[in-house]
Image 1 (cartoon, rainbow, N blue to C red):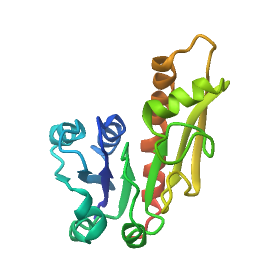
Image 2 (cartoon, helix red, strand yellow; image 1 turned 30 degrees about the horizontal axis):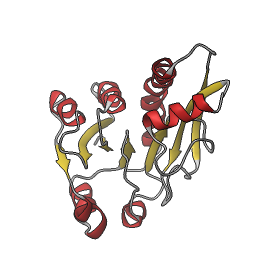
Image 3 (spheres, helix red, strand yellow; image 1 turned 90 degrees about the vertical axis):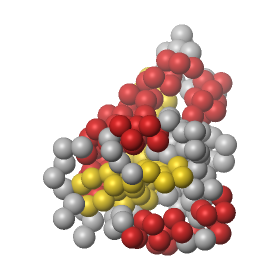
Image 4 (cartoon, rainbow, N blue to C red; image 1 turned 180 degrees about the vertical axis):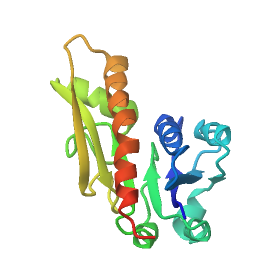
Length: 192
């Protein structure tokens, strides 16, 4: 029986796309569901392209009920991957999936993490600080933004001439290269 992943995303979903591509031919793992808090998110189109079911939820459903957890349990979801998901994960979901929720952050944590630090906000902060390198951090999710235990970090060099688009591009290259591989390693360790 395949192990089942749910992806949570709030926007375009380029990392979600890479995960879908990576596991499309896997005999052991599948992306079973894409969830979003944004009805306009392009990740819904990506899920549709791969014939993966999706679910849109609102703040009330996510924070005040167990409906999202019930959905995940009913679909036998084994592991949760955040891919550009901007809301803080509630305690009840963390307790339902202890050590089974991961996120990717577009910087080397603990620098440039926390509430409001996502996407271009992170890249602009890294550039403004004059950092010689940027990077990514894959980490477990806890009840605080970007504070869960680190699983993997990778770095890239920032040249003085690099603008926002170049820094973003370098970071995304690392995200797309490493996230599916690391997720696969983690999911394979789960006992079904």
